[in-house]
Length: 337
Image (cartoon, rainbow, N blue to C red; front, top):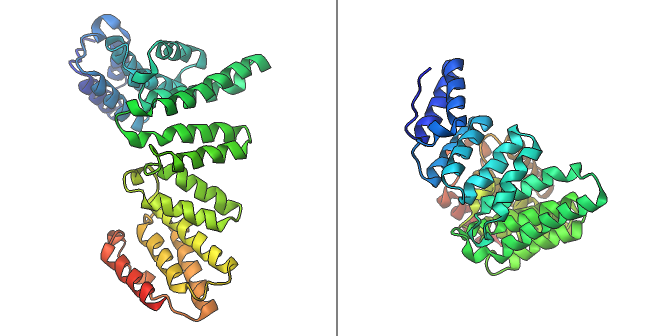
């Protein structure tokens, strides 16, 4: 079958189309085309275009084709660290671990000043996946050293990242590593460092929410509330978290903090307001959390015989972010407190 693929975007489109059409022969032909370096080198596209096309493919579940297309991009742009990171990431879904070592070896030869967050993150994911296969304590120790050097180097090179909101990923990597080793102190220390570091303090919504979760689980509702409040107040990076869930943890933490302090009756309007915020920000498919909010509010109304004023049945989910409704309730809460 004669085939010509003029651009990386066209390659991604053909893969999706042929799969959806059930055109297996054509789909296999695309795969062969990508594996043939002599013809694949004619596929036009810059480094970002190759990366973006492979991302679209993985979102549709085509990790093997994304891997092949990333290889074409790498052959064209061998020092593009996003593409090398992509090869590690996609390869974890469709290739043997031993085959992926070559991509990390190539990354290692590039000064980390030029690494993107993907290079760090996907290298970390690769080594974390390899750890259980260490054949000796010595090998395990060496691999753990590589992982620790990755997040340490990531933190040392924040200044070179284009988007500073990516910086908190270094601390999330550090948390994941120490959490996997059962070292809770070092895991939580990493997250707390993110909230104190001047370069990440206003861009660490994920770290703050993870801290809120952990402290809520251990019953430290004061700290849980503090970190949930940090998470919802970080405007730059809210896309990295479920804002509705963050508000939910905030509300639950506030309620149980006030219960423990025996001051909930005096601050009931504030608690109601927090639950209202959670309900309005939760996506409609989070039915378990939405039901939990209703249950908590109804329980409080029953216990303290104070209506919340929240008409759950009539709330418009399409206006979940209605600032006017939220401000109205917050103003009422401040007037009654």
